[in-house]
Length: 404
Image (cartoon, rainbow, N blue to C red; front, side, top):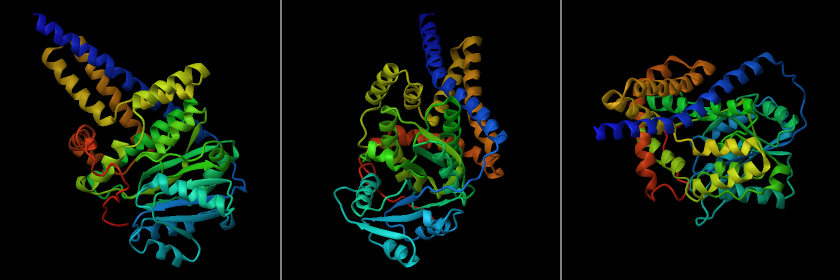
């Protein structure tokens, strides 16, 4: 039966291809578990830091939520004279700027440029303004306007900078975790991307990615590599620039920043399209090839690992293909193919289970897993269909939320 043999051959090939990214995720999971245990056994000394921070907050029509972030920043356990908050009211048509001015302590800069809209342009403009006004700081932290930070946020960042790091990424997670199944599933997805993976990379001696919210950059680093990231995924674009030039990003799990997520799939539409489309960035294959050549010529593990990370498909894609492979194994496969499909599924479950084990989430997270199939189908629809449309991909569009 040639047709059956061809089907089995294609099935085996699909399993081999699928095994590569799943193996990579399992390695990161194991590394994350070991690194977390190592950090738990270490005693970190609390010393007074003299690092002066600038906290940059790009904001587009955020009058309903900017006050919550400012309140959390006012409660930071860090010397008040060692950090300054700058809000960039970017093309705002509401009272965001007025609310910041009324705080009495945060500074606001209003920017109006309808042809160069977006977070990347706002950050570039603000950094130039600070240089022009001779407002010098040791390090710059970028926060989204819909966030709150833990009281020890700057302490943790200062400690990592004091150990020699030039670029840092905080633990970027969800504020309204239990608000709906959508936010609970988003917590799982972000925990895997923003905690398990960078924790594992710390353990491997590789580099974390930058997620935009909670990233910290030394002034010296920005002088070497000025901010020129203007795509809809400006944070990841700048991360790739740093990696290509041999810089490392260190993940700081103790520095936690939480942001409010959309509570329905309809509200998630704009945000997900912007995240997946990444308009303005060069093609993935071209970046991967350039990084691979650079990594091999410099014998740099971080650059080579960045290539693997860059080429790893989204979790929804892996889950969908695992399901199809398992189904095909039951229909046309031999016991060997069926066993391979089960092992691949188990590998994904171990990866997801690592997030649950490390952070011990509330019961709502486990209940939300019942909605996971619908979430996966939605993400696949965004990835393969909606992200190809021009709507919501070329400019900074505020995501609809229920409020802070």
